[in-house]
Amino acid sequence: MLAIGCDHGGFNLKPVIIKYLEDHNIAYKDFGTFSSESCDYPDYALKVAEAVASGECEKGILICGTGIGVSIAANKVKGIRAALCGDVFSAKATRAHNNANILTLGERVTGPGLALEIVDAFLNTNFDGGRHAVRVNKITEIENKYFK
Ligand code: RB5
Image (cartoon, rainbow, N blue to C red; front, top):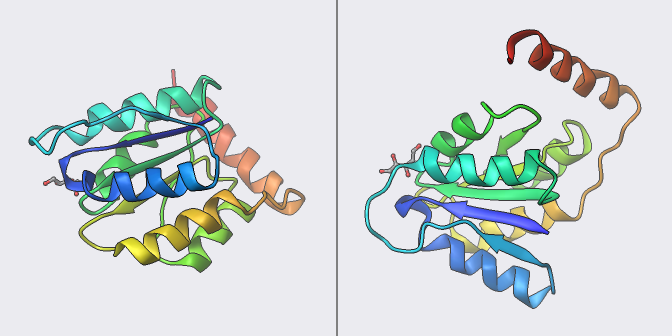
């Protein structure tokens, strides 16, 4: 199951990604927002991040205007490695090297065609493990030191 969410700044890109998910038979849960009315991106970042951190969803996608706000907010949840990607190379690398579990996108930055290529790369690249697992474990150690 994939968690997806956005604020009003990502409201037009979300259905484009949902169509990709449906076309590829990927199960998803839509955490909103469900209208173009102005709202607060941390609210939706929290919903998606909690769904991923709890194990309810395996991965997540968050969209706001820049992708930055939802990334900052989601990364405050223990166990979340949210990566803002604006290119395909980064989307592959953040899965292979960082084992990122949330992709964030900026609707005002990244066009829909590129966004779908980024989503495809993110969802179809596995974590490499090995030396990268050692490094990701060090991120977890930082979490354990500073999170309650
Ligand atoms: C909303 O105007 C905008 O600030 C938000 O979508 C996002 O870009 C924040 O980082």
